[in-house]
Length: 158
Image (tube, rainbow, N blue to C red; front, top):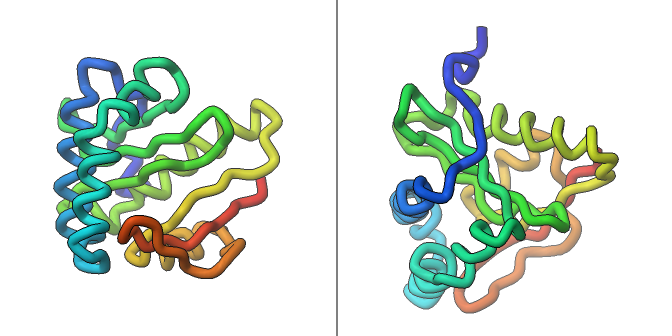
């Protein structure tokens, strides 16, 4: 049995968004921020953690967030937009390398395949690139920098 099989995956409810964004920020600071400038860290926080417009996308159905739960504790999140762009994948540091992110992606991919989706895209942080390659994503361009955020555009054909 895969270690991640004992955890529950489900959509994140509106009342859990603060918990999800706290998890995102904590994991970002620990694993992603070391590869970014102060500008990138500040931009990420303002746009994706504190920013109301990103939260509104979830509240208005433009993004769907899935969570991985160990009992009632949220230990991982993954979100995807209506246009099949993954906007975040974050797993608590104490739960990394246990198959959680892979299981979250399997769940999302399974749902998208049933809907007839042909591909999903994401912008991978330098920290995430090896993981995304390992689960089948391919680079579709070279690394870019936007407001201090370093990312590599990637795609997975379903």
